[in-house]
Image (cartoon, rainbow, N blue to C red; front, side, top):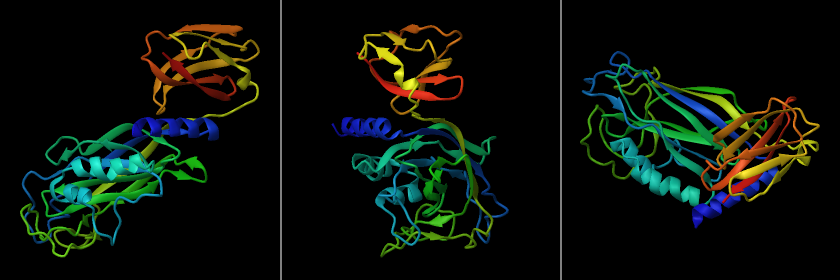
Length: 306
């Protein structure tokens, strides 16, 4: 029931206030290496980054913060690379409170891999949840990790086109140890999250770099002319008609899931007075139908397939 309520709230905000959904691609590049991060300690066997996980959210919630104690979810990632509690407790509680949109997992990276990057494409971010938090364990280690805390993907009411961040090692403050080892005593009392750049075995060089690039934006732009377009029947069993378009030079008609994923795109090559479309191949549910004209104006409305 909570998920249905969240979806309904999302749709209301989308249509009432002209919300937009941005799609971002994320690239994590490794710079952790035996030369720069082996100061007085043997470099570990099988060095790797555990799953790079994250959540997009609003400013009502903070998942981790420098100088603050780590939650159990953050502790489990920093010590073991275990994301379970972070996903099912930290993030899910925020989703249930309408303070976060989604959890995502970009995968891990072993330094022995031919690839030097983790790539995660197609992260769809709603305007209500523009802050990005991400973290991954430096493994093996006592409780060392990298983290991005509440990175804002918007600026001056627009989506940022590209963001690049140098990442440095953090200590979660939950486990003792100063070498690349896993079996260590718990820090008692628990400490706070601190930056350990320049603290052996690390020097002051970055351990990774994060690049976040904007791929596309789905907007709900209302123009009086396009709002005259009619869609019927709605709800539908699969066949729809779009009318009142004889004086509009249409370019495309697009269908999106409620989270902004493009499901189908139709190019309009002539200017008919109406279009009849067969959508019987669509799954039952709610969609967003977006009509775009040759001048770049668009109109979006809800479509229900029963």
